[in-house]
Image (cartoon, rainbow, N blue to C red; front, side):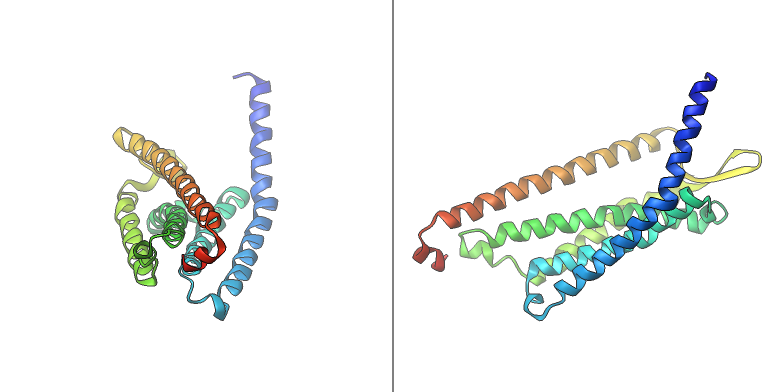
Length: 222
């Protein structure tokens, strides 16, 4: 590696550190404020019975957990070089485990909310009846349980590894099948969640367009 390449890498590392030291903390504060104001809006009495609003409140809760755990820890690790997880095996495992779970829970709840909007926008009365808080509680519970079980491997494979005699790092096992499993599973899950949200949004939009195309008097019945 030439000296110019090493200089460019060093500049890039400095930029990366300064972003996490000065820019990301501002985004962290703004995200918490945004979640707070959104919660105040959703807690209005007129919206409490709305099933979709219930999904949004749960999504806000999971999002706040992610912001105040994973995002905050990443600010300290990358921006200020405070690596507490490198000195505690428990913190190391919990950091990765909660990061995986909270990263998946928020988009999962958004998909459930999209399914609820698809059900409630249907012209079939029996289909609309499936939109209920009972189904919301059940769906969120099953989804949370699934991700908790699915990422249990992080508590086993993530550990503190010695990279050279005087340095240790908290990371997952990069040898053999496990590295390929984490890489491809993350890629497949991210693509699947994105595609599911797009498809559900398109189907819901079509349902709304069909309702709007119905004459006004018949629309009231629908």
